[in-house]
Image 1 (cartoon, rainbow, N blue to C red):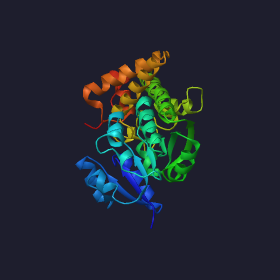
Image 2: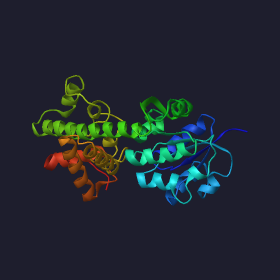
Image 3: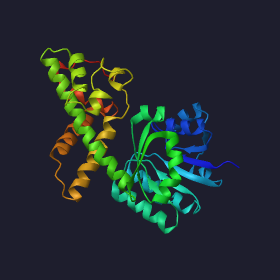
Image 4: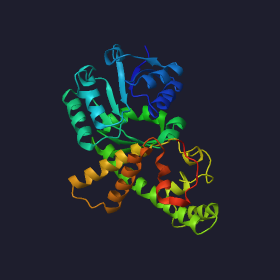
Length: 305
């Protein structure tokens, strides 16, 4: 009998991740509390469970979760119907959610007490990475658990990193997105300045890609349309990776920095900028739409309502 993977959370990221697992020949059963996500899963003809007990009714080899926040992961793993009390010692647990380090360690510690192997494995690469199976996985957990999980992660991603012990995956992800949030604002400021100076933005973009001002938002994910095909700025800023999710990750970074007394002045400013952007109703737009904030009256690009 083929090994069965239980996948919880089939939203914008989880849905294509499941699709890639199935394409590789894996048997997957999914669950999501959102009716909308359930309908999308039905359209893909996924095997859908109505509840956790239904999801875990057979001999599950692996549980993968892709959830919005720490409270969701805690509830799924440790709540009243928590899966840690429902799976066998042979079941591998993989939480791909980006959550606070404390909650990640708390869940992992409870799993360890039950002699269940678990990793935290948040991802980088957004919806495009999930669809193209080019995600980067940042993994925290024992070497043994990492080695068990790696073949599955390689189906869904391109770069798999073992960052350290449990919680280090989320720690690395928080650090990465702190830099990403800051650099996206910087890229937006530079390109919008070029526009105000009446310099051809395409020429400035090409120069920056080949000069010291290059960054991931410049070369891979430019915040203004017309610079690169297939990115959210060329699709009315449909996410991608939403501004709301970036705002969440920046808050996690600032909270973590406070706990260890790290100085993050640019991170704090970026957090303030994204918080205001989301409060103004932009949470569901791609995070690169932050260019609207720095663009001011020079910002004249089409954005989805």
